[in-house]
Length: 75
Image (tube, rainbow, N blue to C red; front, top):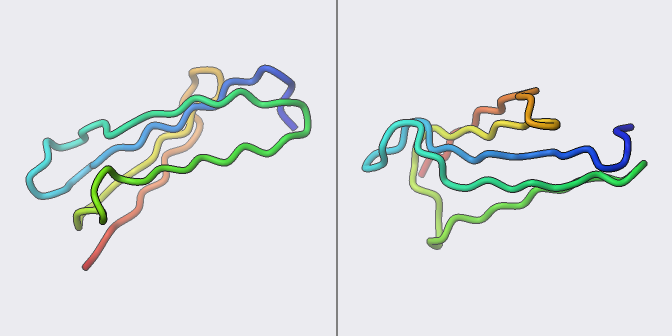
């Protein structure tokens, strides 16, 4: 139910991944909401698979951090 022109940003972070600096920012995407619309963020790593480790995505609304989602990749 966000008003039009609400900015939503997703920041993808490699939190603890072997061979990668801790809390390395992988990428970020900014979408602008339209009234009543749904936003979908999609991200694929530049290689064929995600390296095993701990990751997180930070979600911002109008530049204010609202939620951090942690996830893990295992092989």
